[in-house]
Image 1 (spheres, rainbow, N blue to C red):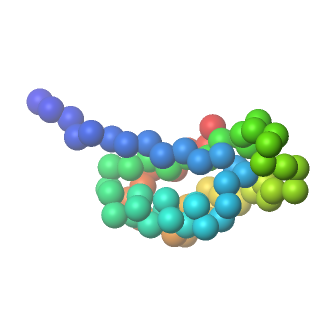
Image 2 (tube, rainbow, N blue to C red):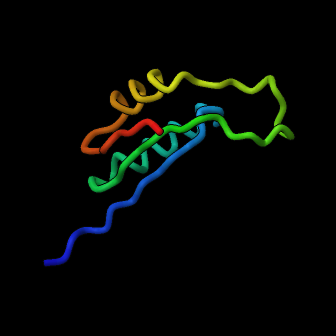
Length: 74
């Protein structure tokens, strides 16, 4: 028996909120997608003034903005 392909999408907690919203829209259209958030990246060339979102807040945002998506926090 074959299993459906499952795709996981993970963004760093310091990605712009517009990036999160765009990914969440894509994930909503794909019932087999898993969404996750992880620790901020360590690319210091971006600067220290970037927003860093709390992991629980991102999970709540994902839950509100999506349906039929598996949510994880890394």
